[in-house]
Amino acid sequence: MRVLIITNGMGEDAMGAALAKALAPHGEVEALPTVGKGLAYEGICPLMGPRGHLASEGHRKQGSLIKDFKNGLALTAYKHVRYMRQQRGRWDKIVVLGDMVGLALCKAGGHHVDLYIDCYNSGYASTYSLIEKNLIKRTTAKTLCRDDILAGQLRADGLDAGFVGNIMMDTLPELSFDVTSLIENRTPITLLPGSRAAAKKFFDLEITAVGRLSSKYELTVLVPVAPTSDADELIGAASLKPVAKNSDVDASDYLAKALMFDGTPVHFFKQGIGTLARVSHFVAGQAGTAVFQSAGLGAPFVALVPPDARPSRVERNERLMGESRISCAMSAVEISAAMDRLLSDPEDAERRGRIGMERIGPAGALDYAVRLVLGN
Image 1 (spheres, helix red, strand yellow):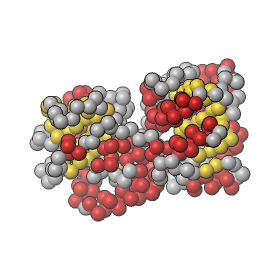
Image 2 (cartoon, helix red, strand yellow; image 1 turned 135 degrees about the vertical axis):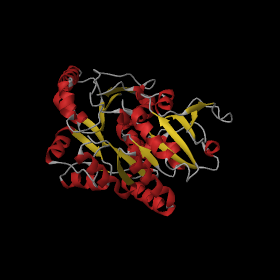
Image 3 (cartoon, one colour; image 1 turned 30 degrees about the vertical axis):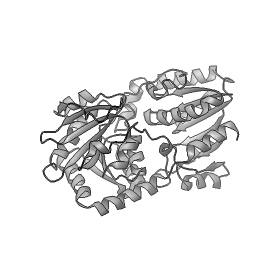
Image 4 (cartoon, one colour; image 1 turned 45 degrees about the vertical axis):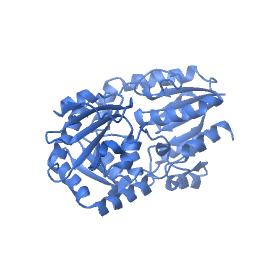
């Protein structure tokens, strides 16, 4: 059996790679990441089709869609459709994981989708439009939604849809070791610089905000570094002092250690948000999938909102995450105040964490998807 997995972004690539790894013993798996380099699939399965690049890096800001079209989005889409038309009959099963882009690509390319795993829409914030429902109806045999609110919408229209868990919670990036010894007797918090070009700027701002609290709280800062970022560059951007890593941890995914001006330790890791969010009082920063995964693990989230962020997208994420998310402008004073609110009131932080777990939902979709693809 030959299976194609189509994904549309770095977070979706990581989920697609986990699915590919689970399916690999049972057949030949190939992946088509529509944008980016598809780094998550490295060593797991071959990449197919043309590679696309978004000038916006997938960050939906005001005017970003126009910018993407001006920088070749239309040509990239054309290449993808042409490739899919040339490959008719190549795959026994096609799985689309992510948003509607993969469905549209299969429709235009003349392919039927066996399984659509929706990682984007939510019954709390972004229900299906008539156009989206029609696209699912015309292309897809089975849809797995992020919650049963959405699945119920599709079932009411006669479509085969269900909710068995949120696949992003099945595919959490974990570290190979316990970070407890690095935390010591301090309060652990996690900062997300993100994976885009502005990661260094975001991280500098996050560290500045933490610095306003260091005289009030003893903190340990934990930082998962995306594959597109570099720990040493982040250290330099935030004017931290690099020091030797803790000698009791010898692991390749423990990347670096640095100190803030007041001696607050900052540890850097190769991704690992699953491990870090579980132990953190809160998570703060700029990122995509890691934001929702953190909330799903019960960590309240302080979200940095750039001034050019698309208001509708910010509003949608706020509706989805409810009070588990605190939105802040790009101001160290405002970000620090939100952090202080969570640190000074542990009961409220726990309450917000419970809301996040409820909104994001549990794991379970990955195993179900594997069985479905294999016909078990």
